[in-house]
Image 1: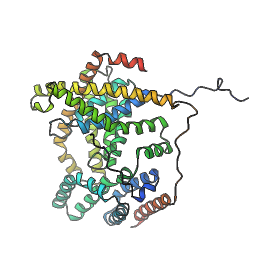
Image 2 (image 1 turned 30 degrees about the vertical axis):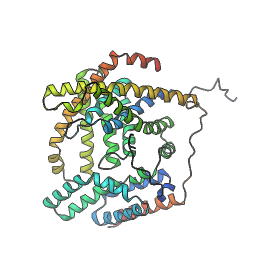
Image 3 (image 1 turned 90 degrees about the horizontal axis):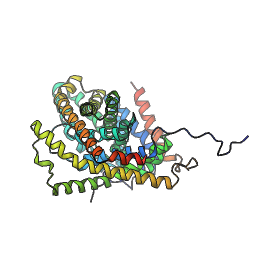
Image 4 (image 1 turned 60 degrees about the horizontal axis):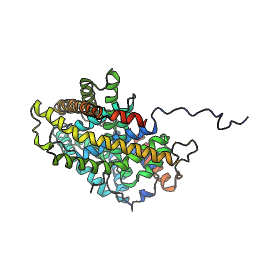
Length: 239
Length: 191
């Protein structure tokens, strides 16, 4: 069974009711906030942490931090040792915010919602459709690729049998990857063609095609936007 | 006088057809699936670039238009960021994937014969280096001292170039195999 490529959707989060565009702006603001000096950055990070906890996003955020843990520890220790604790703290908080800024979007948005949000953000509808469709293909392509891998292993092509240390090993190993990639490319092309046909049959290329429904911004969106941008601007202006 | 449907001016043709766009989207999904499913037994920084660059080089040759690898890179960046891949957050993930596609496209654009082994290898190396360059730029942007970044990235630069060359060459081998199998003739019938 292929594992789902994305973190699980947090259904009970209040951010599920927010528009994906709002979440994108809030996440972009959190990314921009990394340029604030340490005291202001600390205030913003605290506010961000409160929103994360209130939204029930602690688990995906901790998962993201865990993946960046080695890099965070190395940067923190080296900066502390060579420059000082203030700088080490600044770098660590900046990296933490950068690594977790878009978790609100990733953990609380479905591919359909992303599709609608991209169309609303003036992304061409065919490109938005392609992104949403491709996202759904990932798990199937992964399963197909694992199937190809097992089939080729049954024929004696095993990637782990090469040491990859000498030039001869590299050329042999690369040649052995070709039978894994070529069937995947052919299957992917067939999938693209079938999707094109299905989309055409449903009138996707019709000039009178209706775009996806776009919900209007609600109070929760206005509150999030005003709160985040207001906090960012006031902290940036504060000296 | 109102324009009848027959007299209405035709809509401008899109640069990529729907099939080409979906093909690039599927290649972008393949990049993500490849990173999840194909674990090559190499423990060096940048080894994921082998299959990744091969797919970008292949995408550029399968949809032979300037910008096709860049489009595949941008789409795979959105998919990877939305799938929660990468250890330094969505911005780093998106920018890395998009930069790799852009670099492969730029290298293939400069080449006269896009499917040549040397050109593919160079494109792969540039793409893999662009991925690393984005990480370095983000580290510099958040204020990590330049000396630390440079010192810490000497070995990864070398391994990214080697793996990128390997990926580009793998892309060339894949294209040769696809051509032998009649894939491009099959594709021509679909366009």
